[in-house]
Image: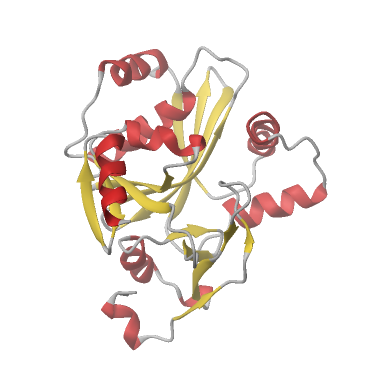
Length: 253
């Protein structure tokens, strides 16, 4: 695998984890390539690594590195070319009353309660205990780089919380959770549209959306933001539809 030249002069090493159950495709095992030691991964290192398909979870910088599966493909939006469909314009109009606040990484009780509710409704996690606070903090509140949280409120009521990393050429969406009680809203879509607009305001080029998995319905929304770019064979390629992507992947296979 090709790695940034800047890493060669530092004591950054990479290791492959042992296998663990895939969180997206049932019955499959996953492995990750992790950059270590995490305390030496500077902002400059991360700026280089995210362009190579890595992302961050807590203090760890990683990318999927499965021996028999290549389903996880890094995806990003080039904001200069992004096309606002009628539906996207409608989502922006219907949610523009939300008040966004940019905050440093810190624990907020109402954020944590919304997180637990989101996990229960979207991921069927029904139990909550003291370990959840530690897991939440390790996952979302620990970072060695420029990371922020963005909260969206409706007249003081918390509706969306997004965690992001700010990198040299864009913004990486780390994790977002939101109020799932109202089915008439599109909080998830709006949070991404807000990041795209924020990226444009900051004169940055990309919104990184993590990984797209063709076989995972949970990931389908990522290719709705067109055109999108996928990191395939160590280069970013632009696509206008999921159909074009699938055709290319089939040809590669």
